[in-house]
Length: 409
Image (cartoon, rainbow, N blue to C red; front, side):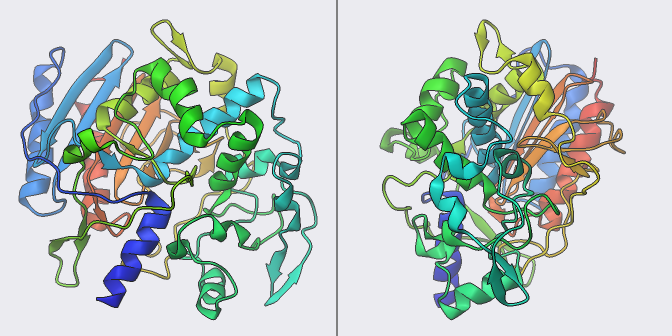
């Protein structure tokens, strides 16, 4: 029981507030979907029947609009904890402030969040100053030096000794974590985007929730995206499941709510497949959806270019296999990173064009934005561990089936 509670707490810190039982209903494809999508329906249905996922929602858009929506085992309007799919939203906010001249990409991050200058590098068990300052660019590309305690043994050990506040402690104490390497020297997934969220709040003089609402969600009509789901919509929250040792899927108790007033730019949002697809469509179209523009075309192009040079994305290690699958890679042939998005430098084996933007959340929520072929897709379930073989394989199959169905222009 203590292990389950600890896991619930750490997931709450990474992913946001509690999840409750969602409604059970069958979704229908969008009116302009084509007959070839019946294969996609069958794919999603079989994944649920085979217990690879507890339930799933899939959605696809082209330049013409939403082309496909389907749900199996949950309502089409189910609200998911999207965890690290929050990161592209925070990165979008940062780029808006870059456009406004309020943030500079190559400025030291301490210009906007002075406390970041106090962080040192953990090097062979000792602390030393970093060889260069952390910049906003480093934070946007996960090359700042930060990691996650559940993916890094050194950070995990510091938490175990009580030297570092844990993610499971709630609040923002985990931002005191040391760097694991000098900024710019390698790519490692970690808490960089939580620091970006703090910078957005400092520069805009708004909470991250208020900033997102005013500058991204309301303009795009994303009315089902929140840090804290309002009471009237909590019945639509998708329940979380955990893969057990015998391979079954076990429903999990609700997670404790995060402290009031702390909004995690790295993992705190809830959203629906349709809402997130709306954001993806805006990015796919160069920052504009209909008459609403949230980014310039130049900013979107910059976000979708390799920003880490010769560095390469590495498979994700895990020191908490119940939370994240060890040595797993996100499907999509991803090897580079832009600003807030992973990229495949070459066309993928499933059909994605080069430099398709993609990422995921630890509860096995996924998306990609193929600007070359004008396809955006979202696939959402709600289970642990992250990148469990069941949903990871489903994403590969869904990816390939989308291109086989002929959505690409």
